[in-house]
Amino acid sequence: MNILVINAGSSSLKYQLFDMETQEIRAKGLCERIGIDGKFTYKPQVEGKQTIDAADVPMPTHNEAIQAVLKALVDENNGVLKSMDEIDAVGHRVLHGGQKFSESVLIDEKVIAAIEECIPLGPLHNPANLMGIHACAEVMPKVPQVAVFDTAFHQTMPKSSYVYAIPYEFYEKYGVRRYGFHGTSHRYVSAKAIELLGGKAEGTKVITCHLGNGSSLAAVKDGKCFDTSMGLTPLEGVPMGTRSGSMDPAIVEFIANNEKLTASETLTMLNKKSGVLGISGVSSDFRDLDDAAAKGNERAQLALDIFSYSVKKYIGSYVAAMGGVDAIVFTAGLGENSAEMRASISSGLEYLGIEIDAEKNSKRGTVDITGKNSKVKVFVIPTNEELVIAMDTQAIVSKL
Ligand code: ADP
Image (cartoon, rainbow, N blue to C red; front, side):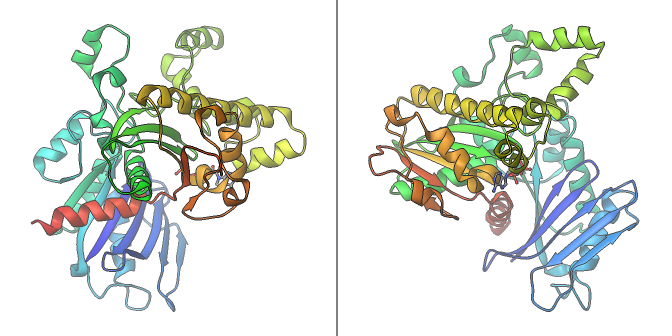
């Protein structure tokens, strides 16, 4: 079975074609600057086939972008498929499923309407995700499509984890509550951790740290999400590459008044110019911060310290919330690749029984980095959101 995984943004569309027999990627790439000047990338993962990296490819809408993807996939010389009919299903990453979706679903008119209803909760992403869905439906009308939501895994949280301490009517009227994101990643790595713990979800307490450009943590009890750090939007929680994370909400009005900004301009600042970029003034990329800090840049070091401190506080709070922890998982760009950040976050948690082994911590891939005296297991587990989307899609379309 061949499954095309699509992650559509407002002017971009990332894609990966999976062969589900081997779970391997046959081709992947990116359509960028859709509606502007069109940039198209195609990387076949098959020997002897050429990569395409082309600028000025006409892509006025997502439809032409999907058409360009299909054309490349079936190209006589560099394609990896004989014909479009070999695509068995499409899996879409959808940002916000609100309270309507607690798992992945086959897309039909009702699902499309429900994703539309969630637009106020995900105003930047959901319309783009819908464009991807509509484009595939037009270009491949007979191919089943599945939606996989970033919020779905977190739908098991108890009310005490997700209701904000603001007038309750705002939850009832507008659905203002914690939803959480990166759910596909938290689900995948927590399930892998449970396998490593012996396979029985019942009774396990796992904390998953998805640390990348966007970062979030989840407390996973009995295999189900119990709490997570992101909120109504991905702005809440730990500081990130460019997002502030949690702070005193009164800062919004204070900055807006002083800088003569509107509420929405202030939020853009909190989403795009804050986090470790805002603190350091150097970069949102943790590798740049490491380099700058090594050269004595104090604000870069401060940004790293604040990030690590914040993740540590969330781990402590989730241990308290679940009444213990069996395993801590590090994943995503920073969590998988930065041994220094994992060591910095773990240091000082020995009193909770959390210790890592310096030598094991320097290894790559899926590794158990648990220290000799640690009561809690610590794992590095590479995430693979696209593969989970492909697997969910396969499971759903296999039942048709
Ligand atoms: P996204 O949230 O965009 O999916 P990723 O999970 O790919 O992000 O993480 C990207 C981030 O991971 C980069 O911005 C970078 O800061 C960090 N990163 C990747 N490799 C390393 C490394 N070796 N050391 C430190 N940070 C790293």
